[in-house]
Length: 320
Image (cartoon, rainbow, N blue to C red; front, side, top):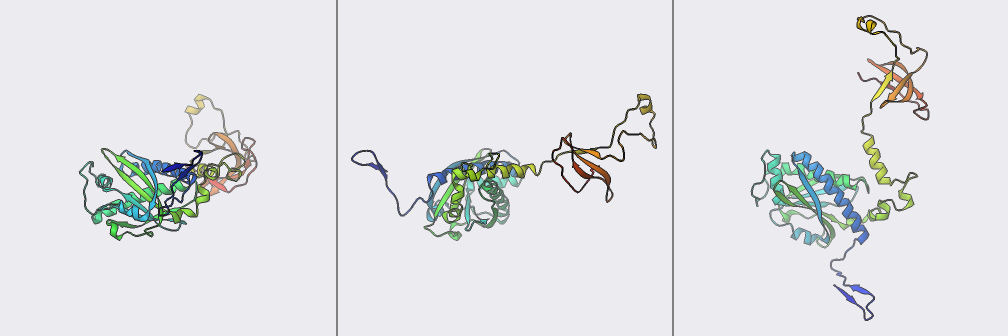
């Protein structure tokens, strides 16, 4: 609720000291982007896990006390408690029964779509749900990578809200609501982040810092640190074909058809000159042939004119 002064120029908003909003609009905007990314990662991870199309979208981002968070859980509950090192504290991940049981059915081989059950999980169902929680935790790790490298782990899986207590009742929390849809079933996943966990990284949740608006956040090429590290991490896993040119020769078709085991072809490559090593069809290195163990190998001598600056390297085994 807002009030205007007599002059009508300033607006005054009521402040609730019992439920203070500790996160600024800028921090909330950055966290919204972060959880939007998490939703996309979760859709990919869960689709691969259940082998069915899964849609995940961020539908809410609220601040509330831990007491209010637990009051909304209902009974029964499928609540995972996770830690994200090096952040201090625990996160509550609430997967509503209306989507938890369809996920369990699909993972156990059923097409899903059955009536939502209102009962605690069995031991087998709890074990299956742990795999789902791990996929959600993996998605959170990927989403946070632009801000901080975190490592998540599931520490507990509770089916009753009465045995869940990972924060003081008055502790403020950021609760992100994700809508998960699979087939004809849909339900919410709520992540409750205690403020004490986020407080240490609030400077890095500044949009100016995160999006690279500050000079310190960008490198000479204009890329942000998070963008550069993400690109580098993906490039490190890219397979690039390397070939070694042993030389060429020209023969008549008649001679080619008469070739037999034991025949020798004279190449135009001198044994006193280094071989050319090509990367993805481009001549990059020069090197000398040899062996490494039982494999043929080439020891890199340096870079060619196409490859750029000279480099030194270890012998590179040839893949047969």
